[in-house]
Structure formats: structure tokens, C-alpha cells
Image 1 (cartoon, rainbow, N blue to C red):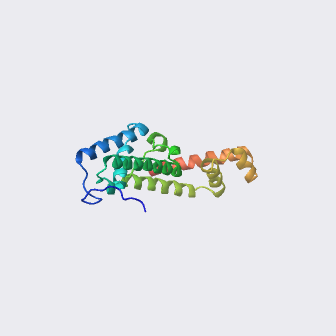
Image 2: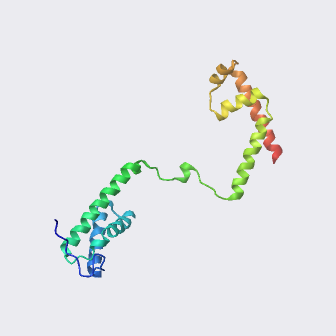
Image 3: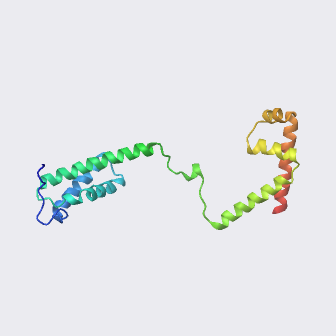
Length: 178
């Protein structure tokens, strides 16, 4: 049978000496700062260590308490590493408004965008079917003139004429809406 760890007479959850607790916190913070630098995550990791080690902070044997806290810190560090690997955090791309576009949660802007989309859809529906098909394949699907011509069995110049006709009609329809 293993020997019991030396605990204070007040029980395992006894409040530790504030000076000793502060010294341990400072040491554990330094432990994580050496590994992460000035990362904001340091404080979260320190807190996790003390939450896990809360039962042992009332230990009378200061050396054992310190060893236990640092063993817990090493465990927290290993857990962090495993989580980062599992979530592939090193492959995450930070959000960049210039690259990803700004999000506008303004209800009026969303309504305006929906209305513009509805108007564009309605304008597309006014086009003759073949012209609409060619326009969608060219401008929305991104197919080349040659691919569309081959697919529809028409010449490349016919594809260009239908695309130009669609653009003229859509621009005229947009002008009517203003």
C-alpha cells in the first residue's frame, strides 16, 4: 500500500499560504512563457494548472507541492500540444478582411444585397434561354468560349455575341431599376 502524501491538518483543499501560492504562480507562468513567449494563452494554461492541482495546494511539504504543480504544468503543456495537433491549429489562416471580405451584419445592407440579387435573377430570366445559358456558363460557371461552343455545338463568335447581348440587356435592366 502506498504511503499517503503529507497533507495539512485542514484537509486537501486547505488554503495554501498566499506567498507560497504567488511564488508557484510566478514560477509556472515563467515555465509557460519560456515555451510560448508573450502569448495570451499563458494565463489560461496557468489557470488550468491550478485548477487541476487545487487539491494538492494545501500540502505541508512545500517541495512535494512544487513538484506536483510542475508535473501538472508539464501535463497541461502536453495536452495543449495534443489538442493543437488534433485541431491542426498551425494550419489555420488568420482572418484578413482584405483577403476574405468584410462581413456586414447591418440588416439594411443585407436587405439591399438580397434585393440586388433578386433584381439580377429577374433580369437573367428576361433573357432568351440560349443567351441566358451561354451567359451563365461563361460568367458564372467560368467556362471558356471554346468549351461553351463545343458543348452547345455553335461557333466561338456566336458565344461571344450571346454574351455581349446578355450584358447589354442586363445593364439596360439595371439602368431601368435606378
